[in-house]
Amino acid sequence: MTTSNETQARNFLQEIVAEDKQAGKYGGRVHTRFPPEPNGYLHIGHAKSICINFGLAQQYGGKCNLRLDDTNPLTEDTDYVESIQRDVRWLGFDWDDRKFFASDYFEKLYAFAEQLIRQGQAYVCSLTADEISEWRGDFTTPGRDSPYRNRTVEENLDLFRRMRAGEFPDGKHTLRAKIDMASPNPVLRDPPIYRIRHAHHHRTGDTWCIYPLYDFAHCLSDSIEGITHSICTLEFENRRPLYDWIVDALIKGERPHQYEFARLKLTYTVMSKRKLLQMVSDKSVSGWDDPRMLTISGLRRRGFTPESLRDFATRIGVSKSDSWIDMGVLELSIREDLNERAPRAMAVLRPLKVVVTNYPEGQTEMLEVANHPQKPELGTRQVPFSRELFIEADDFQEVPQKGFFRLAPGKEVRLRSAYFIKCEEVIKDAAGNVTELRCTYDPATRGGDSPEGRKVKGTLHWVPGTAPTAEVRLYDRLFSVEHPDKDKDRDFKEFLNPNSLEVITTARVEPMLAQAAPESRFQFERLGYFYADPKDSTAGRPVFNRTVTLKDSWTKEQAKGK
Image (cartoon, rainbow, N blue to C red):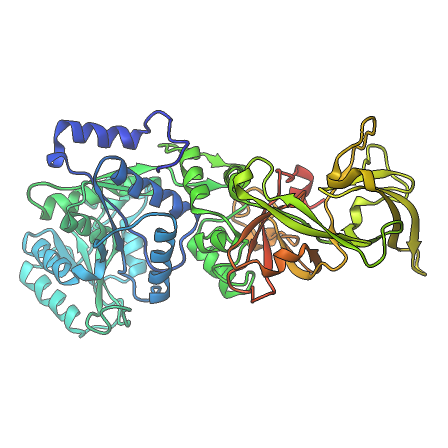
């Protein structure tokens, strides 16, 4: 987590790694891994884990592997594998030559399973999955021994080898670890470690019809790769005894240790891959990279930067206890980053025509405008000014309310980097809608400078009358409530925000924006930060996604849908 904000005291994971390294544990090695399952696109919670695992390795001179835990062929796909690699690299990390798959170790894992059987620590169970679950009990119900628990080593080896050979249908048999059916921790009550699954695997094809379960494959993959610190989220804490049991039963000498941190819990979103997939499948969103999705792909397409996500990961810290992080913290990270890097530009989303009646007809002058008020190194640009221009429709009120300092009949405002103008006449259509303003300008105020003694409170952005049109997409939070999946009796999609996307096809932008390259970032003055969509922008016709507003305008009233 190498960001400018990394001046905080060390978190508990850093303390563990630092103490182990100082004590010479693992010979001073630090070796972590990021082990996603390739069954969906990564989300903001995975970004935190990526920053932790790769960041610890960087900080303490170690290594971090990328390992795809591909043990369930029914849910995995090469598209997910490729997206995971793109996301990790985009965040600024690399695994060098250390990209691995759990499927790389299938033969070794199978051999480990046979070793457990020979040691009398695993057996083939012929109960159904539902029966196994029932017989294992729970925290209040004791477990019961399977009637197949005392099969001989020879019988278990024979059945397990026949499972591998494909003699049995799915669910007919399961290989279970033989631990303790009376354990107070249900996880240790003879957990399944291999299952029959006749399914095509994205890497091994039809070579295998039995697959190790995550608990078995994960800890042994860590051991095979020489991982020192196996870092995972807090929901795996009660599974650590199983991790240790399997490793201790099969691995001699140096072994990895598991440590848990609190997973990211962010308001106004859901973190379940299953729920994200559901929204993609039923077209509640346009895809995994929909800019409203808190997937890394969605955030990237919306215009978030890798620096802002790394800053967010540092800002929220690493804890052992669960707590909610407000969405505003994520938005603050991207605002602060873009405020420094994004050049300024002007765009008008809902254009209202202005005719400057005392400006010479047919004349156009080029005004020099700074690209960033605090960064002269970003240079300037030329914006044409002529008799006709556009301002935002809501920057005019015919009967101004109290505290309204923008344009109104008889009122004067400053046009950014241009002139003072004064509204002299309002033109309306037959329905009474304002369609045009007739104004006069003061030639002495070129550049927007105020002559001595003149006070003008309002400064408006504008674009010339020849400004090209552009499509602008105003993205907002995908859900309208802080905790959309809190109520288990209601479908989380009931809380989708109907105003999470507004598409404007008649926006006007200053001429240079028409040539904006895909992935360009700008601050549209007074409107927010915008990003030229990398998928839908075409040559000379960019589509601008709003990344974030200039300030946090999300109120309790908005959250309640008022």
